[in-house]
Length: 367
Ligand SMILES: Cc1cc2nc3c(=O)[nH]c(=O)nc-3n(C[C@H](O)[C@H](O)[C@H](O)COP(=O)(O)O)c2cc1C
Image (cartoon, rainbow, N blue to C red):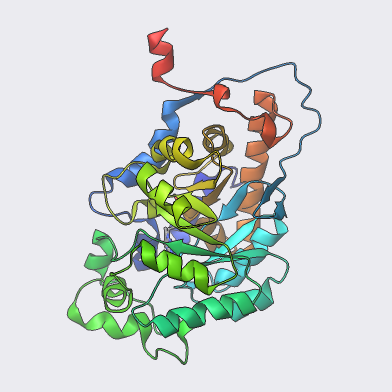
């Protein structure tokens, strides 16, 4: 069967990935209310298309942090990609490069920073950072990302501890013995596997033993001072934190609820976007991830003020459907879909998208 939308990739991936890994990839926190909301909330917005505007030639290109991208969609950091396919992070990063977009490598990857850099030298790569209690370990990660040619650091701020993902607890989720956390090989001997013995989710136990839950904005300041790379904060859901990110000198923000995997009942990313854009969007790079499944979703986020969006799970589904080629196919389906949205809304370039082209569903009831 031809795979013509992200949902098709998702369905096929569900038949390919082993159950414990599939549960890890697809689950959200708690009752998974926000998990569903991340997608559903896009349906609350209506697009107001314009016509007779010559859309015979389109250009989806954009410039983000000085980098020319072919379109405004990148791949969000997701841990342990070799659970989807042996090509893992290398395949995903190469696919992002051939689509002219950004790949963000997770700290908790199953491939090291250096291997990904070698495998995908022409991809624009950012490194997602978790801050470890062991600060020298954290600094080593930063130095390695700098040395390997990564272009930005993405500091995830919404995970001082990990949210409760019930299926991971039920499955006692852990990394199978043939895989490892690539960035810690030879540094931390056992990683996620060593914490398997208490009968709970191994990843949660790893995180609470390793990640620094004392983190505050002072540490963001420390990180910014300790690197020449731009620092983006990922996981902002409020205007208050957006303003702090600007005050502390961050280069950008990713509005995100971590794919609804941290705290349930927080807003969908697309719901939180307008207040962040209103607070800092005029002078700061605001991006978004969470629930993006089709071209219209990308359009909605851009019309509400995001400059770029990212997909997490869709790339994992693509990876499961054929490694690098599967991700390339998924990205090309999404890109084509976005191009159709642009043409049918009368937008030749991203600059033509504006907030008058989108209204909340309540708009029509009030007329
Ligand atoms: C399986 C999985 C693992 C993830 N691992 C990380 C991670 O290591 N670091 C991080 O900052 N975010 C992580 N995320 C969150 C993603 O970066 C992103 O915020 C989220 O997947 C976006 O939502 P989407 O999956 O609906 O596109 C993970 C998400 C998933 C689904």
